Image (cartoon, rainbow, N blue to C red; front, side, top):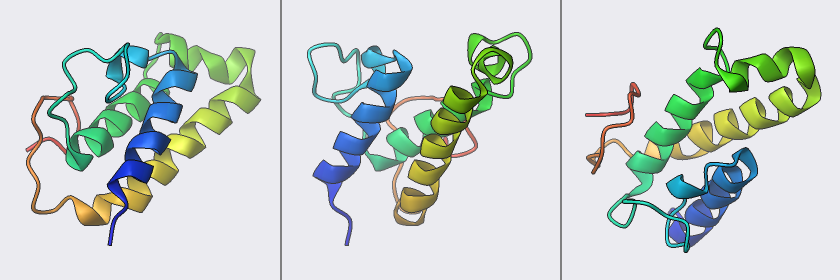
Amino acid sequence: MINEKRAINTYNNIMSDLGYEHNTIGTRYSESTENWNLRDMVAECDYTLSTFYESGHYNEELIYSDRKMWKNYTSRLKRFITNYKLYIENMKCCSRHCSKYDN
């Protein structure tokens, strides 16, 4: 069984730490995320993770300027995806995230 409140809290913490408060759910900074479900959160984490490997993206440049921070962020995103991807098979995303978890 999945604890949705815990998933949202973990997801919001990751997005806030990354400076992506607009992607949080149920906060005063959230933008168009009110209908997001667990699949949306996994897909957004997957997309965000991809930016850490995208040449020229600010997140990718962290590997050179602050490797410890880069490793921390990528590990947290990977862990969130791994922990919750098993529960999203029968869900549909409410938004597009440019992720392999979009449907």
